Image (tube, rainbow, N blue to C red; front, top):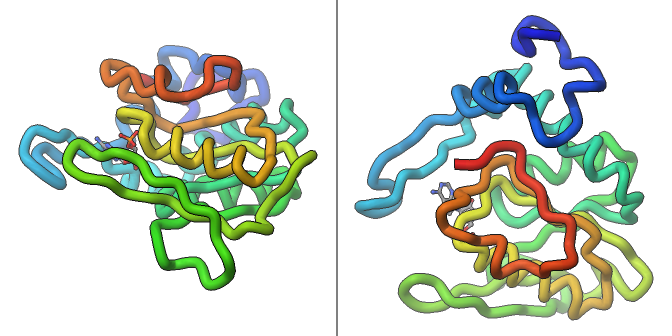
Length: 194
Ligand code: AMP
C-alpha cells in the first residue's frame, strides 16, 4: 500500500518502525503550536491527528498490534491524552483500561508518585487495586518529552506490583532524551520521533 490516506492500512504497514512515508504522513497530521503553554515550547497538538479518521485509526492500529505481542492484562493511559489512546487500544485488544490521573481526581484509595518538573513538582495517582502482582500492563501516553511523567507512571505501576511490559507513545521528542529516565529493560516505542 502506498497511500495510507486512501484506505485502511494493510497489516504489513502496522509494524514498527513505520516507513518514512507513513511517518511523514502521520507527522503532517500533527499541528505545531509555538510558545504553548509557555515561551520556547513547541506544543505538538494531536487534536488534528485525532480529528482525521484515517490517521487516528492508523495510530491506534499500529500501537494495538505492537501491544498485542506483549499479551498484557491491562492497558494503562496517563491523563488526559493517554486516555484517548489507551482506551481505544484496550478496546481493540479486548483488555481492561486503567487510568493514571493527576492528584485528587480518583475517588478510591490511591498510590501516589511525585516527580520533578522544570519548576516545582507534580504527581500522578492510581487506584491501589487497579493492578497487582502477576499482572502485565502496557503504559501509553501521547508524547514522550523529558520522560518525567512516564517514569513516575512506571514507578506507580511497579509499586502496585504490576509488570510494565511495554511503554508507548505516538510522538517522541528524541532530543530531550526522555528514554534515559525509563527502565532500560522495558520495550519502549514511539510511532514518530523528532
Ligand atoms: P514529560 O514528562 O516531559 O515527558 O512530558 C510528557 C507529558 O507532557 C505528556 O503527557 C505530554 O502530553 C505533555 N507534553 C510535554 N511536552 C509536550 C509538547 N511539546 N507537546 C505536547 N505535549 C507535551
